[in-house]
Length: 569
Image (cartoon, one colour):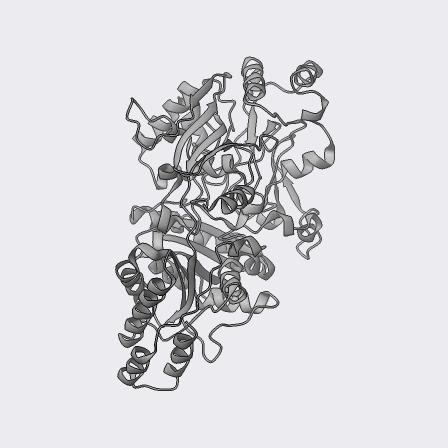
């Protein structure tokens, strides 16, 4: 591919596209390829709006100039606190449910009997971490975290909590961006991280069965040794757990190739609020015996039951991987490139990401050690295209033909193909480094939206018109599956700016029949905004299901569904 790279560079110095195409056509296919199947294992950045929690030093945010810890606004006497830097938010905190009991010494004695001292955590420092979300936006006040090691222990815990009407919050890697994995008030935290065993793997079918507390990166490493990969890849893989991934229906970079977890997950084991264990841990790709109940729990964010075991179909690891970093002058060209990529690259297309010039400039300005892959000039849009296949020569020929045609048609203005794992890693770091750059730039209003690809950028342009010079509107995301990450960056949070963003951003999305949460979930942040993406009748049915499976409402309360609807049901 180095020949293509050199030829692409020449395009910038000539306006004769036909002669340039002839140059590309005359290039013989390179006999060398590169593979970076485990590329993102080297990355320390999380994709989208999450960075790897391991690099987030606990005091780095707290010691920043915005004075986070010094400016806390506390809701209620024992309730969730939102940091002052995020106070300009329309997230409404419901009042604590008066029917919920509070922890007493008898409860602690029971949990010690079930779990032993090792599974009952009351240490203030550990609880502080468990009570605080990754964004440092929300902070609960739980006084107890339980760490079960078996499904039976989870069942005993929930049976007891249900009888006592003790509210609980399931927690995995705690990488939620919408306040979905931390207490709102004093809920008991049930952390499943100790349930981290791989139970079986079928090398013929590629079906993996494991416990819900397995860290995603550990599963990826295990499968890599077996010649397989996970069907999802997240920047949070070093911290997030598969149970949490499933409970939030996590998306990620591979969705365009392998689809959502609704298609990959074959079976689940789930513990209901009353301690009942639902054994749906099938390993069959075809099973039409009655209602497929596992889908209720995929994306329900722990509000219907706690996932304890998982059966998932994993794809084989393919040896040929290529990554191109490309430039387009307008968003229409990005759309056309996407259509062409789906048609011309077909089965080898594994990722299609985009970022605009604002995102690119922000990354290069705020992050150290990053260089512009296309330094000679600025471009309005950038696209990353990854291909993954089994035949290097075949894959390179398809990619070269695709790129040559895109250049000839004027859809691409520049581009470079990664020559080794280090260059590919640097390309991905640009895309995955946007959230960190936003964090360093100041305050950010984040929106994770699913929209028709042809209309995605219209929202960005309208938002820029509304805000003018008051904010930097940054856009990037998974163009291949219509997921826009809209970020409004400002020096500090401002209610006047927020009033121009919300509810406009939700109303605009609703008019396009889009989703206000493409992959981050609803959590606490968007529970009262669910109506923008769902009809009143649909939400009522959701509430009815919640009432059947969790009559006392102890599972992850105040999340996912509007509090007003739950109180009515």
